[in-house]
Amino acid sequence: MFIWDEKPATFKSSAERRRAMYRREIEDRAGLLLRLGYTAKDVKARLHKSVDWDFDMHKAPEHAAEVDRIVDDVYKRNQK
Image (cartoon, rainbow, N blue to C red; front, side, top):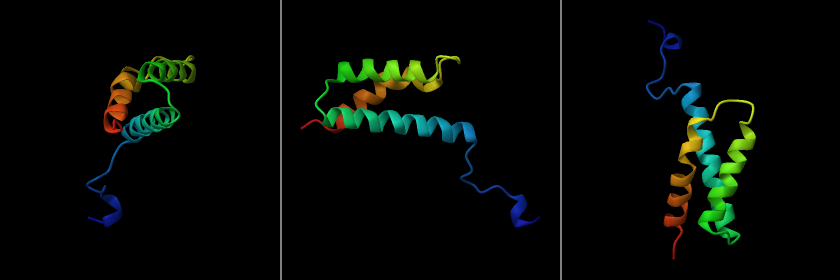
């Protein structure tokens, strides 16, 4: 009826935006550590510990299971 009553077609829930933000953060950290010369194995261990630290008072977040895949993607994209 009124334009302000309608949600935009690309509306995302706050949970979806939060998951995307966590994934981007992991990608950014992995990219930085890659440029600093760390191996993928070291980066995975470091990021797993970081996620565990961030959520030690809560249940494990969904993105915790994606750390290895994200790091592998970052390293594959940046291979020379």
